[in-house]
Amino acid sequence: MNNFSFSESRMFSILFNGISEGALVVNQNQIIVELNSSAANMFGYDIKELKGKHINTLIPQRHHQAHDKHVKEFVKKDKKRRMGENRKIFGLKKDNNVFPIEAGLNPFKIDGEKFVMTIITDITKRVENEENIISLNESLEKKVQQRTEQLQHSVDELSELNDLFKDEIMRRKQAEARIKTALQKEKELNELKTKFLSLVSHEFKTPLSGILTSATLASKYTKTEQQDKRDKHLNTIKNKVHYLTSILNDFLSIERLESGKVTYKFDYFSLLNLINEVVYNANVTLKTGQKINYPQDLEEVEMYQDRNVVELILSNLLNNAIKYSKEDTTITLKITQNDKFIHFEISDEGIGIPEKDKEHIFERYFRAENALLNQGTGIGLNIIKVHLENLGGNIYFESLENKGSTFFVKLPIKHED
Ligand code: ADP
Image (tube, rainbow, N blue to C red; front, side, top):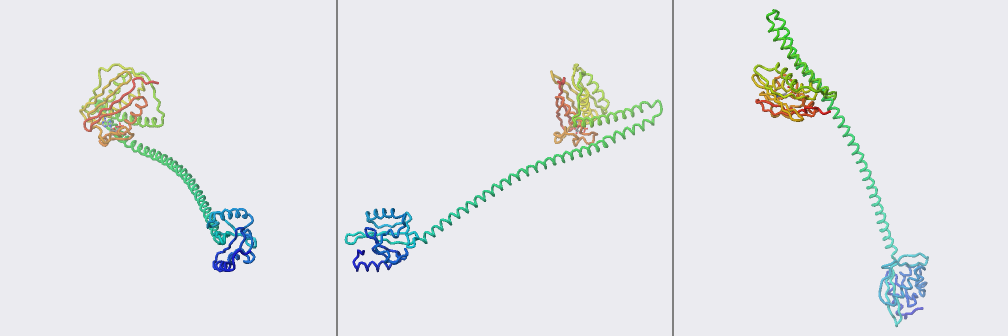
């Protein structure tokens, strides 16, 4: 079944055997008419075995139909082309093994008869390599994905840990703040106790020794006509006892205000009476040449308040005015009223309050620098302010150092239950 002449056939065989790729020629009926040893080896045959066989011998069964169709179309078009470029094609070996190939088809005519020469390359290795690369890529992608998942997991764990830490830190901070507040309170309490003890010992010592001196001196005046001398010392003793009582009252007030135990006793009373009483008591403590100016034509006002507290406020302010002023000065008490409120103004021509101390004046135990030579506890104004706030009133002051001070008090005439 050789369609070539002898010389042609020899030429083919020289050409064919000279190339390392597999080469075979089929006729129009797809019968193999020539092939080289590379092609025969590739498919596991001897050259002789394949000559005259249908090309389908070298194509796996399942590709026969597709190949047939493909070749027919190709022969019709009569063009050079490569097979296996866009789709995979396979060869069938004698031992039935299937392997991937690439084929270049070259149609030609001899004496009007159509032939196709096919150059075949066994691409098993290349495909293997490609598959290796693909599977390497796949496993690499898988690994990347796994690592990403692990990383995400770690990130999640970390952020969970972070949240836990945040909670823990928050709880610790809160606990710390609680401990700090408790400690601060404890410290303040200790300071208060220390201050109280030093105040008590200091504030009580001087009047007590004064009382002792006066008592000793009074006892020396034994004669009947020395009554005025005895009276003078007895007065001093009375004053000092009065002072000690007021300090003790202040301390007790603080204690009661602090513990919330303070209860007010509201009742009706005459303002006129109260003022007379307060001024009368204050007059006893005046220094030489000092006097208290107060309204003589005061209208009668009926108040409904805690009388003792109003007395404490006014006497404290008057006592301060006296205490912080020199001899021969005037203390003025002014009283005005409207429907609801009564206003008291207590002015003096005393030492005044230094600018830098003004903001602290109502703080408990605070005493201005220029007041330290006078006796005092720094409690009075603080108590007054708390009482006034409790009773719906208020207090403020104006003062110039070395010129004098005025304290303004506002209080509801009638407490509303
Ligand atoms: P104390 O008079 O016992 O020190 P207070 O609470 O009554 O305590 O007063 C607090 C401080 O306010 C005083 O130490 C003093 O510095 C100042 N102060 C109060 N009243 C006057 C005043 N009339 N003139 C000058 N300073 C005053």
